[in-house]
Image 1 (tube, rainbow, N blue to C red):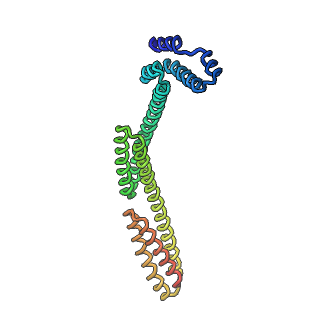
Image 2 (cartoon, helix red, strand yellow):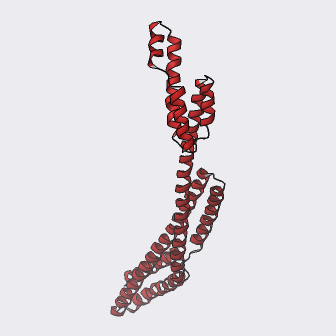
Length: 257
């Protein structure tokens, strides 16, 4: 602080130009000297401002250039400090936001792991979802390495890649849940159709028609058993196909009556 005040006092006492210099330059039409005065005064004002800022390592060089009459060089030193200060501020902001992103994705992976475990406990096939989460953790590890190397752009790229993989893993679980429900609905429909066919066969008085219908009903039962086995194995698409075949066979049984 004392150094900054001393600098201001020295600059104010020694280097501030009187307004008469500008008037004289203008009076004699010496445009060049007037421009030099303008530059000198601008640098002087910037030096006064810079003297009040802490951590300005370029200030001594700017003052020396000013004393030597090299005002353009002094201005470049002052601009260099402003640029470095802005870059430092931007880097700090990127560092903080990147760290927040990595932490958020880490939490999202943990939450997704919990959902996958719940789905696995329900008997769902979670192999694909688990594989996607493993890849997400690998991507996040890469993000951490880039963060440690201060490559925040790369770190954010890999963190967002990890987030996309987490979303894909959750989509796998949701898709599996939907397939499971579709299979259950198809099996329920097949059971209803078989029950209706049994009632129709029982009510029929034509023995030959009943035998033909019973053959189709037996097929319906076979398909239903296959559908239930596929459902228990988590093969929900196969379960839907078998259940639909069972329903069709039950309807064929009714048509024979």
